[in-house]
Image 1 (cartoon, rainbow over the protein chains, first blue to last red):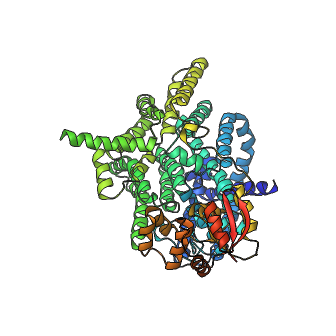
Image 2: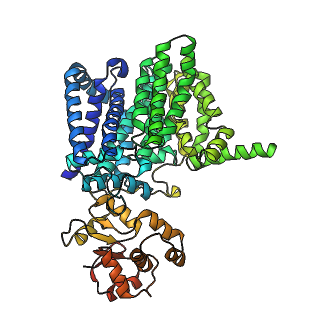
Image 3: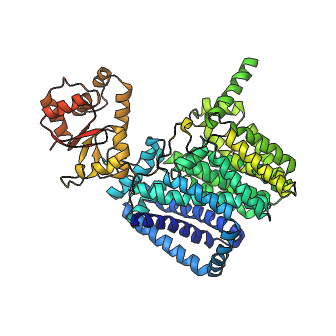
Amino acid sequence: MLHFVYYTIIAILYLLVFYLMGSILGEKYHMDRIGLVVCYGFLVYFSLFQVVALPMKLYRAKLSTLSISWGIIVIALCIFSVVKSKKNLLKHNSNFTEYIKNEWLILATAIVVIGLCAINTNHISLWDAAHYIGISSSSVFSNTLEGVSVYTGAVAEPYHYYILNTDELQSAVVCQIFHLPSLVERKWSFTIAMATVFELAIYECMSSLCKEKPGLRQIGFFIANLVLMYSSIGVSDYFAYRTYEGKAIVSYMYMLAVFYFGLLLYESKTDAWLGMSLCSLSGIAFTNSALFILPAFELIILTPIGLYKLFKCEWRTVLCFICPVLISGLWLILYEVI
Amino acid sequence: MEAMIWEKLSIVYYEIIAFTGGNKIWILYPLSIFLILLLAPKKMKAFYGAITVLEGITIINPIVISILVNSFGFSTRYHRFFWMIISYIAVAYASVLVMDRVNSKVIRGVIVLAVVLAVVRLGVPVYFAPESGKPFVPRENTQMTKNANIELYPILHMDEKQSPKVVGDLYWSMDYRMYDASVRTFYERTIFEKAVKNDYMSFMKKDYCSDEEKVIYAVHFYLDFSVDVELFKSAVDSQDVDFILSTADELNEYLASCGYEYVGMSEQYTIWKVK
């Protein structure tokens, strides 16, 4: 039982780190909304990790080197965040009890959904689970960055097809630092963290759509989750059964994130381009599908509003809108070159 | 021309069916888009309108699908483009827009009830739906793995060797190594897949693996017990195997005749110690 308390603390630690990393960004990006801070923090965390881990993976560094480097970076950024955003952190903390009283339906729905995801251990596809979790457990045992075969444990080169993906190494780093089994880190701690971030993203979406009507926001949140949990197959299955898998994270989290940042752009909050750019920068850490899905969705959202801004000669805004697609293009070029 | 159009449209239809699994809840999505375009504020109408039109002329466009599937090899992955359809937000937003038009709490309650009933009646739940073929499997232990794997661990590490090598089928090794990556296993994925696709004679004729590995495949995978015991033992020694997992009684007899030691059972596996 004590073990599970520890594993749950790791899940809370994930969320805390995401929150602190999101707080580093100025208020013009996250608008001082807790859900948006955490979502931005998730994107910042994995964007930075991708930038740090990928060169180390290509140069076959040891896992312990990556763990030490990443640990130092995260601690430094968290301290910086606490010092920079002390007032905001205190303000969010004091609002929390009022929030629990007023948004009970949202909390109850989120707890049920997150709980079901965490308790379920059926991963449907053994092949995919063996890949995602196997890379982490094999890397931790061998202290390499994907330096052993997931299937046999023999020494092997990282599989070239997945060369740009680093999410499994992030799991290995956390497992090495905190002495966690990979299965538990993925299926409990990270699942709880991801499900929470996703629920926060749905909450922020409904907040934007429902404006100053908290009653409607609660009902909207509940209905969104109900539809999600009754849409067996597709994205819903990925979320429900494979919450921690890279492919699943892009399908439910990144698609919603790009959609939400697009929504903010259409509401004239043009700084949301940073959120989309972070999606492009970090999405490839999870799956190669991000190479085509993310830029396609970004183009669908950005083209009409980009053309409108171009027509109004808002050049700076147009340049900002090009960033997310440019980043995806760079990843595609890098994938072909490596 | 007409036949070509129907062929292209049928590609779209099958891609949508592959993505939705025929789940009738997806009927709510176009209905929601209609309500949003009717009732939403101007900016949201622009947002949803733009996305719907562009998705319609790209990802649901039969010509685009044909090009991507035939020219760029997206055949098994095309339906991933449908991840862009954020249906749950659309349905929730449409419901909220309809409720916002009425002031009466009673009528709002009726609308919520109608939406909930529609979702529950049309949809298939992701959890606890036997017809979906995906059982909800609560954790058996704190390690988030099967109890059988936990029982197997002390047996495989009985000699305190850092990385014992085990001959057990690939499905077992994929599952077990997520829990205990210290164990090395015999079956490598690409060769195993060749063995699954080829019959015994075809596999033995080809150069998928070394001669020693073929001997182990012959006995353990193809269950050919005519293989000379000494030949098999020599192949096992050359591969540095410590344990063999068996699921067949005849294989158990064969392994016993090799002089291997029976050390235990776990779920459906009998465990034999080689050295």
